[in-house]
Length: 269
Image 1: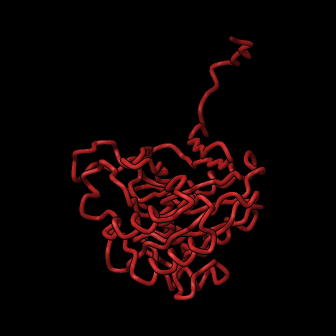
Image 2: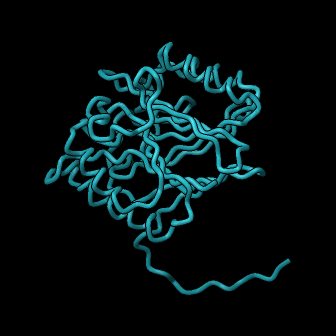
């Protein structure tokens, strides 16, 4: 199964800029690239901070941009989003019984389970998983105990190495990870956003994780700086492939590069 991850688009109402950038224009280029070069993908996933201030106009812009994208879409919400505004513009988005924007989906071959979590707690920057959401996750995993799970969420429930996020990460990470570690089928990978830089790692007990780079603005990678500067980094998205033999994440950010010339096929060995 091939999944396209886009994160931290931070859309603003038409005519506005954010950090001197036009988030809608940047996302449109990304979506055009996905449409034109990744037509074989099975799913498009947005891992939160879709709108910078949760404005309905921003979600309307996204709805318009998705009108010519021939892929099913799953959404997650981040701390900049507003659940009511999002659901007003995307009333058909998958939600759980309590109205949280989270859902689960089996892969095409039925060998894996994808889980999309809502970590938004409005009024706080850091992520939360309340009792209702934790119970939903337990119940969902219990329905397919033998299937390995791949998790998508906005906030990182693992160590990220960015001092800026020390107080605004995932406040209930231990609760979430406890539920995931108890799953008999195991956890294949965790994909998230929030930190605006690319990150890959493995927890001490062997759970892999990756952060998508912010689609609009990104951080200069001064990891120990509590207030690193923003930067207009490259347009980007992540291509995730889930196969029986592994999970693969390829960062795609070569949009406007100048080719240096063709390479040659290598016969080996």
